[in-house]
Length: 267
Image 1 (cartoon, rainbow, N blue to C red):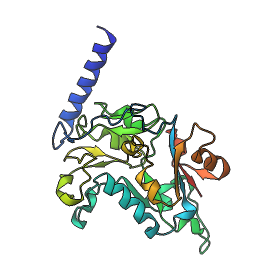
Image 2: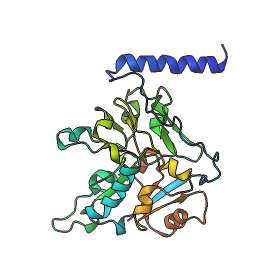
Image 3: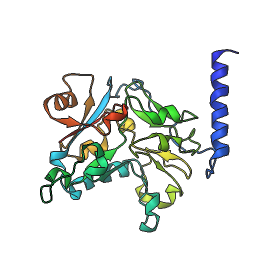
Image 4: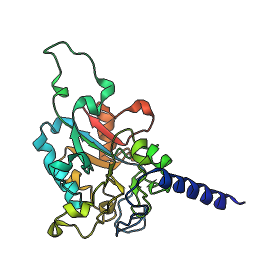
């Protein structure tokens, strides 16, 4: 048996087992949009990088109101549904905020009463880290989630069978599962027709705006951030992100796990 046939049977077998073991809403999802997304270097307008990275300048993002334009820009471009309060536990998140202790639990200490640093008392921006060694990609039985040569981790909604192995594999909680039909919570007049909507039973997450990079644009959240978010090629020493990482004190989430996140925080 040759290698390609052996690999096919391996993935088919794992996928079948996953479907049988998981009470998914539907076995095969159809997003109605692009499958694997824009390939690197296929379009003349596409921004090219050896390794895309984002830098979050937490000094410029202090209160919840500072994050609202960033989150709104991302969710509007990507047709992220806004679920009502009674479905809060089913929230779909591409980019969101959380407390310091949940964002960087490895840095927590027992502070003397009344001496808690101000750094801890503000929200922090969270999104998919597009890790250099993404565990979500390793555990996906159907290859629905995959990594491009430039480091961006994407989802193929057609291949997603809703097993949620990728959600279990991601140590950052950066993926959301559509327990309900997301299209039911998208006003028709607000749908961005240039990006696919999703269906019930698939997993989704931030894609570093791969579709915008293909057009030569920056990620929507970066454009809306007024300089609080930087984005560029970490392999290029002259890039904005390389200079920011080199010239500031930066941290990453859960570095002890070895996933090598490509989202850096200036603190």
